[in-house]
Image (cartoon, rainbow, N blue to C red; front, side, top):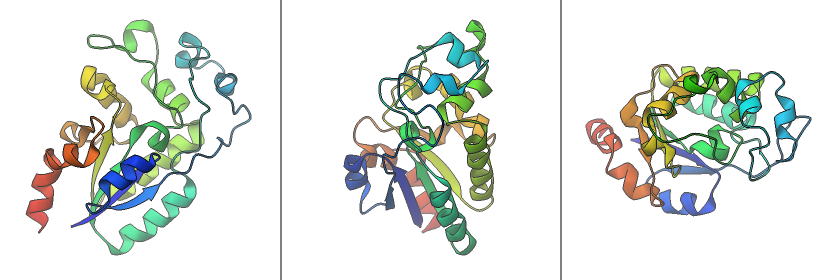
Length: 200
C-alpha cells in the first residue's frame, strides 16, 4: 500500500518515517499582502470569522501545502493509488491552530460562516479552490486522512468535520485522526489499518 504524508513539523516527519513517504512542508511566509500575525486579518475584508476573531494569530501564517506540492501529487496519482495523509495546521491551513470552542459550540451560533473560516485559515479563495480541486482528484482513486495534533478534532469533532468538508464533501469522519503527539501510533490504531490490510 502506497502511503504519502504531508506535515510541517520535522518531529512528525521522523515519527512517520517507515510507514509513509513523507514530505516536509516548509515554513515560508504566506503569499498575501499582509503577512504577519498582527496584520494577517487585513487580507479578509467582510469575513465573518476575521471580524468575530480579529487579530487572533499567535504565529505568522505560512504557505502550507503549495501549488508545487499539488503538482507533484497530481503527477503521482496518475500512476499510483494509495492513502494520502495530511496534517491540518500549517499544512492544509496556513495558520497554527484556529478559534473554536468545545461542543456544543458551532460557528453558526455566533454568526460565522464555515466558508469564511476556511477562506481565512487557508489563505484566501484562490488557495482554497486549489485544495478543493486537489482533494477532488485524490478522491477518485485514493483515500484521504487528516492526522492532526490539534485537540479540537476530539473536543468538537462535528464542527471540525464541517471545516474539512468545506474542502472535501466526501470526507469520512473516521478518517479524521487525533495524533495525540504520536502520529504513527494514532494512525495505526485508526481506520487506516483496516484499509491498509485490505489492500495488501
